[in-house]
Image (cartoon, rainbow, N blue to C red):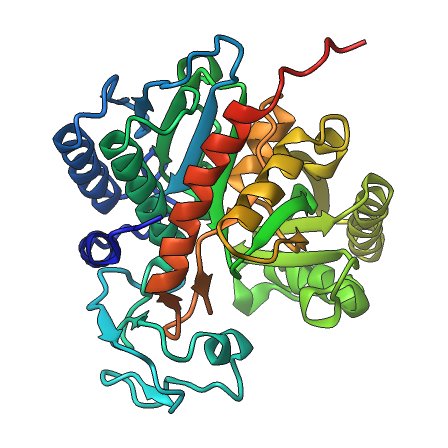
Length: 419
């Protein structure tokens, strides 16, 4: 399969120049103008490929269709998804640098020489010696998370349109906003997406398939103290900010992200805001199992109760809301999306491996809503840092995987009726 890697490179370098950082405080979706700008460029590029049924919705979902070429009527419709936003920690709008035929020496990013990529500290970089490595300049994210996924989907769409003799079912494309702040697919109309199964392109190493994620809750702790002039506050003031600090200190450090790994869950305070009279603490809770998540809720409630008991004059209220659940619970009931993806990865010349994410994906929300959506690799590494990088050849491999995935679904017999 001859994938035009220079076309992939040109597309990727166009996309990462857009600053599409999402904004958790914007209150709108998409949360930043840069996401609209990239979505409109992608809309124009899809039209240039003569891909039909293109729609950019008011909520920032860019939808399109690659029509079926199969003669079979029972081939399921697939959806391929990637998000256009980048993480909130660092600015986007990268200046991409292409390191052709990477020779294994340290890569020093010119705009911040303290940012260095080496094969000693990044094992996947050693695997990519001889390939074309793309980095940013050191001031920004590269944006390979998830513009490498966007690029792979665009490359696969281009290839299938140019090769109508390849038999495949109907394929829906969806580029969505605000994955990095958890809003990516909350308002996506699944009837409008109109797919039977889906895949996100938002994972790392070549051959990787993510079919298990954390289950996730959020917690908000509202603390109300007693306001007083600090000059006359003795025995009157109850400082809500001090109570917020006492609450976070009461959470077990052994259950924090910095002390956990593998299948261990954690409680992670993400924000404290307020003043001496009122304070709000926001947290995220993560565990692979629902029983573990329930235990984390208990620990948060326990910490809140301890603060309340120590300061009867204060008010401490704890509220939880569900974010997403481990996609494994649903994928175990229908193995086809995982099994067919593993076969597609093999056909792309790679050794597949299944992986569990210490996090979630847009597919977590889709799977919870009934659309089974494993997550596939697109080659990004060192994400959420200035050292983010991707191999051009890995984006090509991800493109090949998608094309093979369409073929595998077309070849397989229809599923038996569900008992």
